[in-house]
Figure 1 (cartoon, rainbow, N blue to C red):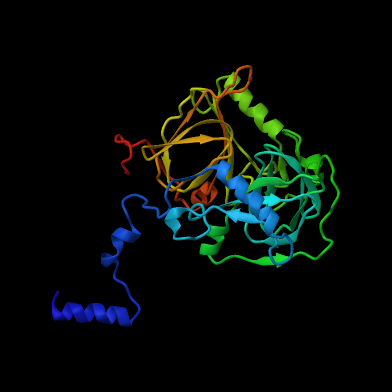
Figure 2 (spheres, rainbow, N blue to C red):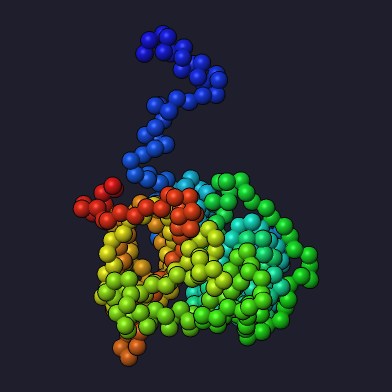
Length: 358
């Protein structure tokens, strides 16, 4: 480098400038090069830790929520599952109440097991049961209460990392007494909106999905019908997306929510896409192969799939003698709505060489 060039770069630095030709490969790579890495968290390890926290960490003002975030090893200690998605295990003990608050970040709860907690969203108490998906759209007040003598644990998913990166977060405590402690079988939102193909007239269109609860019985029936009719994504693979009944779009503006079912022995075709996702095993067992590395999974396990990671799924025949069920049921959430709206969504066929990035 000549003395004149050295002075030019020194002057760039003094002026707060960086020439593109020195950083292009890092900022504009040929394909995504995520810092996050594919990672598996075993439920058998997570749940006991959540139970221990339940005995030591109070819920209430100050602590607010007993939520334990999954930290991707590639993200330098940040409490993020991927650069855009937060996943956490939340534990609520017997007779406990998590007080109301609201925030810009959109959230959902997915129940792996148990029942007995009601989440209260903008004053509407919603029962939480195994397999249910419960929504908390951004800036809706929400609280949780457990009137029973047994604890309950579930998966929290939020767009916390995305909102954090774009500096758009707001948070507000709710006034004491705001939450309804009643325990109805069906929420008001379900009574109004949970009728297939029917939309109430004379009701203003909400800014978010008006349906707060998506019940497992409906999800299970839809997946079962797809497999029975061989109308799934591919042979032995059924999938559904949770949508806003008022618009037909995604149930949450920044998070896509899906359920997948693989019949015993079924193998999904490898996929690769821009954007990241997190998967949780709801039932059964199998393998998720990420960039050529096989990860055996079973009930409750959580897997982070960073952008442009090649993913293939295989279901085992997990039936015990006399058991009716088999295969692999998975819950998935991703940042796809954000990428699609920004024109950044992209998918590619699998690489010809396992483990190679394209």
